[in-house]
Image 1 (cartoon, rainbow, N blue to C red):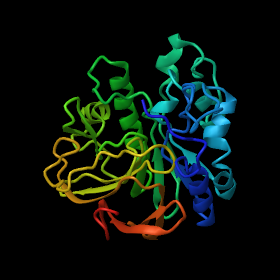
Image 2: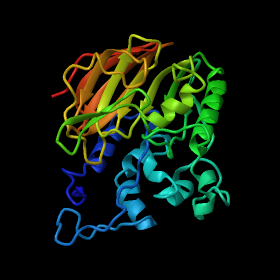
Image 3: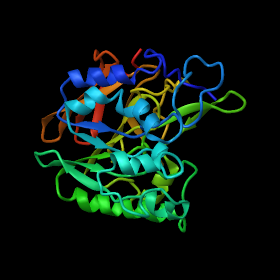
Image 4: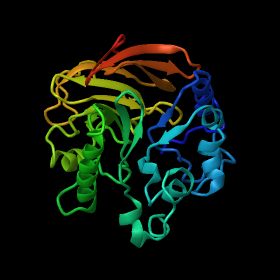
Length: 327
């Protein structure tokens, strides 16, 4: 198991990334999930993380998130998206106490494992952005990349989440949907034989959402904003799917297995045919979006110091970027 050198700001640069993002003076910050990583003690003799707190208490939450994020927390309002690290079997207690915008309720607090079927799920909600647009926030913390089947708790809950999100989406013409697990993005790893293995969009969400709509997302969703995959990524499709942006590159260890150079034949979800694709692997930073028209956004990819490394445009559901692979 790799251990991030959280004592080294070069290898754990979240504080610097947050400070650079704060200098950009955002109107709104959207964090796409996974705030807590220090779940296990640092191995003896590992200077990179020696003395680091671990576990699910406040001391770990403080060092992992609240202290390094402080300048950005002060800079603008936040929308926080729940990640799989904040499920009830992990840091869910802290999620419900520190971050979720709803009141803490007994049974929905991850205190008792018997209540996890309640605490692992929450209803979508909408954040108005003005100009006939809004941000839909969907909790997908407990989905499974292995898939979900009818009869599974998650299948029913995420099917219901889709229906609620679709109802909310009808309030405006344009919607950005923020959730942790990319439905239309992908990553790569090596199997036991050191062969490349593609990790396509989350199967559990594809199956549950797809049971309602084969195109997987409500028709008024313009783009998905997700994390989970530890890189930056953009994908737009020849088919009637919204664009997918993945911004999982702001602090934790990056995915280093290179994606294939040619991706046109890759379908991150059944029937989703890629038209435009861009990625940055191995670099830390943050993504910004500026609205330039009713259905148009200018997207920029910044490095840890705030320098722009790529520029993209989102118009309707279609996006494209100046650089296909950021060096």
